[in-house]
Every structure is written in structure tokens, then in C-alpha cells.
Length: 196
Image 1 (cartoon, rainbow, N blue to C red):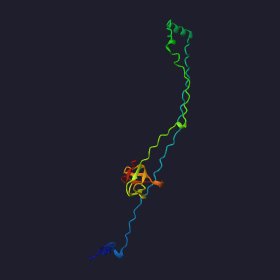
Image 2 (image 1 turned 45 degrees about the vertical axis):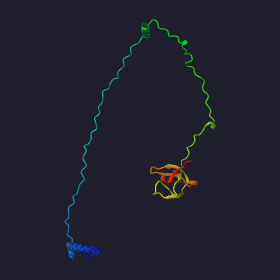
Image 3 (image 1 turned 180 degrees about the horizontal axis):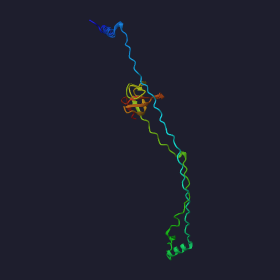
Image 4 (image 1 turned 90 degrees about the vertical axis):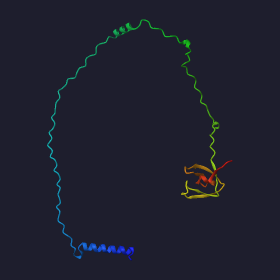
């Protein structure tokens, strides 16, 4: 009988009429609100500080410097006599080490001349051979990143050999495109190792 649109229009008309009647209709006059007294906040008075008196000066008694006691006089000759009396009368002679073969123990050898290496003698380590794979499908899309969500850079025919640059964890292989056309990504399931 009523559609949704008609139902909404009737509902809003009823609510408007209800509001109009509840608010007093055409004879509505707003009430006068009583004035509310506003509390005034007076700033707190600043605390009165008592005048400060100057501190009394205390004069310390004068202290006389203490004279250091003189060091006792030492008779050097008496000390030497005491030491010579305490020393043994005879000292044991040092052993003779001349026949022990120590005469060349501290001699220095002549410096060794530096070894000269010619550049021809330096052999560079051979670079590892690049890993090569062959495109295994008939026409394979090469993408800009490791996954089908990346755009297609080019398409390669089956049997073309490309160099592997890196491998992603998801099984995709980064390859150098032939004829210096850059790099791209291909699924690892669409390549096979080149066996020579």
C-alpha cells in the first residue's frame, strides 16, 4: 500500500506536526530565564613578606700560624758506617758465562731486502661462471618484480637462454634480458637449467 519513500515522508510530516504542537504552536513565547548570579573571584592578596634583617657579621679570632718542627739532623757518615757493618764481608763472584754460547744472543742480523712482485705475477681469481637458464614455456611473460601482481616488461619465446642475477624466496628468478634489454623477473617453474 505504502512504499518506503511514502512511509518516510509521512513519518517526517507526523514528527513535524508533533513538534509544532508540543512547542505551543503559533502562540509559542519563550520563557524568561531567571538571571543567574555570577560568582566573582577576587585574586588572592600577595603575602606580605617581613623585612629581612642583614646577617650579623662574626669576626673570627685570628689564628697564629703553626711553625713546623725542624727535621732532626742526619749524619750521613753514621748511616754509611751502619750499612757497611751490616753488609757481608765477602760477596760471591758472578759466574763466568763466556763459554755458554751467549755471545751472539743479542746481536742483530742484517735487514732483509723487500721482495718485489711484478704485476704480471699477480693472477686474478677467476670469476665464477654466470648461472644460465633456458625459458621453458612457449611465450613467457617477464615481469618488473617477483610476482604476477607486477607489470609485464616483455615476453620471451621458449628456448632463449638468459643469465640468472638472483632468486627470490617465493621461487621467482631475476634474469638479465638478452641484447641488453635490462632485467626482469620470471617464475622459477618456467625456466630450466642449461646443461652443456
